[in-house]
Length: 210
Length: 166
Image (cartoon, rainbow over all chains, first blue to last red; front, side, top):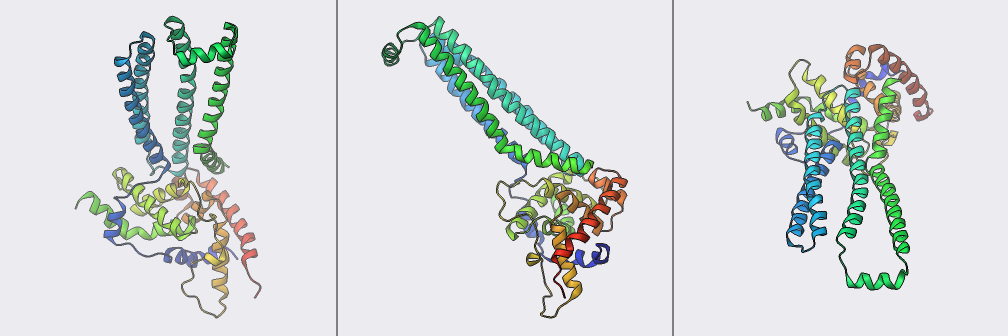
């Protein structure tokens, strides 16, 4: 049995299994929300931009109300970083918006989508990892330059640590464990969100190239 | 006529194309509805780029297939394959019809193909030339011919398992 022999019947079968939509039905559909991966990225970028603006406001507020110089510097720097991040997110949003053009040939569309997803995942990962050393360095420098004493923590550290090197060792291990955890967690999270889908799209491109 | 009205009228006229793509790519009714909505929305978003160089039907096929291939669902409601039981059967009678049986078997075999092969078969069934299929898929006509030969062989073999001995 050949495909060509059943062309007509298959076409009929594919075309008949549906309830026809009226103009009003189609018009109502146009007002609904799209669920494409591009829209998901765009929605995620909008949420992150809103969060950045909220963080910016919160950190600016802390900068103004605190009496400690070190906390003011710490939050001041992160206020600037948050503004920069908002611009980066906006750039990614604009780029996603321009590239999301589904009337390209199928292979080109797949390549565009893969490129976009890879860039999004890469930037997200880079930003998360870059924040770690910035946070560590700042907290170390500022706590050295302008130590803030919190009685409960002081009491606890006196009880647990007997020498300065023990504190340094604890902080070193804490930072390494945190960095490794964040590294693997971010990788796992991004793979869960986009990794399998990305592999699927790459497989389609490879199939088209065969 | 406003752009939206013009689009709705064109889409209504060609909605058969979207239904065909939905039937080919989705097994469960709810999934077909979701895909229909997604294709309609994507077509509306891309309509601004439609210059009329190609026929509206060809353009709509490209948008519909792009959307179906890249359709992203967190969880699948049903396996994305067809079975002879889920093939739409509108003229079902008790009498044995060998052609109907063959169509069902072929339909089920097409359902087992990859998303890319399904797109090629769909365009082939619509009588598009290898050149046109190549343009829509973004590959050469020769590549389409090679793929089509492979698909035909695969379908010939697969249909056997769906055929019940008469």
